[in-house]
Image: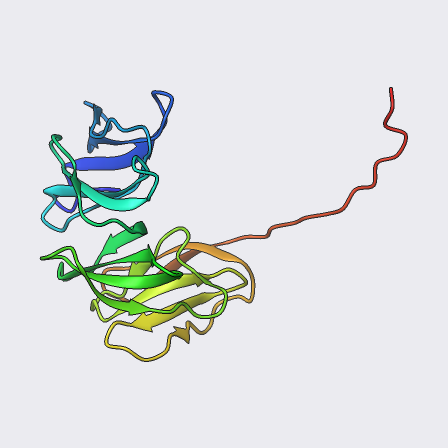
Length: 201
């Protein structure tokens, strides 16, 4: 992920044997390991480029944490499993998968880092691989495990399917900044059954 100010690339990596959050300059130089806990994943960056938010399993919880993009001591923000976060374009909110009695789509205040709304996912809805905000910051799009995508208005109401997309397995996606284009990854998952006989040497 590129920081909003265009200076850095932030990612998780196991280049030292376990997963932690790293930062490089925009050209890939000067790598800096930001976390040292060996169980840190899924970074996303605050709109002001000051903080990197991420999911941590250091306490075996998967809670939300953040750390300065320059490094330092991490701050734990909650005690619930929080995954695949993304900030709204207007910088007022971020969305993430949030697990209590079950997993829901949660909207957090960017000012307080607290949950302000929660939405049940549509049938087969999934936040795996993340969610994406509409350019106007009024809705969040997430995947369906079977086919297509769902859009959840943050003002409430049920999610609706995005129309005009192929009826097949779809994966990562993103809106253009002007909202005129929607990019997505499509593919197939093929499985088969094989009968093995006479396997003794």
